Image (cartoon, rainbow, N blue to C red):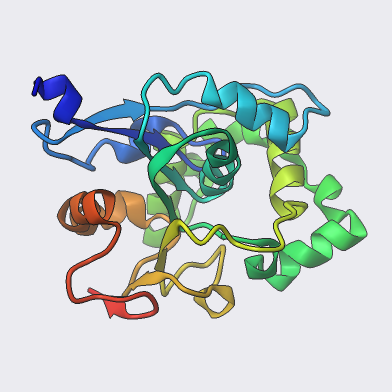
Length: 235
């Protein structure tokens, strides 16, 4: 069998407005996997999530792939999966259905408050680091500057609207969900049936990359972690 035929093609989708550089330290064996980085496209202002997902599917050029998405990218890959025959579907720091959205997002959806978010300020992301006070804020500002690549208002308005208004009544049973117990965007208390990474925050794909380097290969290959079940914390 040719090496190309034995490889599992892994497609990675970053989080909202983020660059695929968030995966730069996630290393998979080139003997077993071939990695393909997906990037955000600017949507039409009123484009449906379904149509956007269809557009993203056009970038998938292999069959039986592993499709992995982070945060809002996790929502996108679940929508993409409806048009693909996958080997594996994995979401990280994301949600599997509307019920897992935190109350504040449900409230924003119900009241329309998400429309009040000043997304135009995102164009000033380069200035965040200058005005951040304290080590934590400075580190977070540096991360934003390094990994946030899209500040387009049309994209941000569309992404926020579709995140808080995502309608999914029943999770896809095939989804493998990896979530941090310290996630501040999607609190773990609202998440069901996930592999819980102890100490993992919403940006654990960046600062806990060693965990993913150790465990992603097995999750992609077998769909599970040896001696671990969902809802069980892993270090």
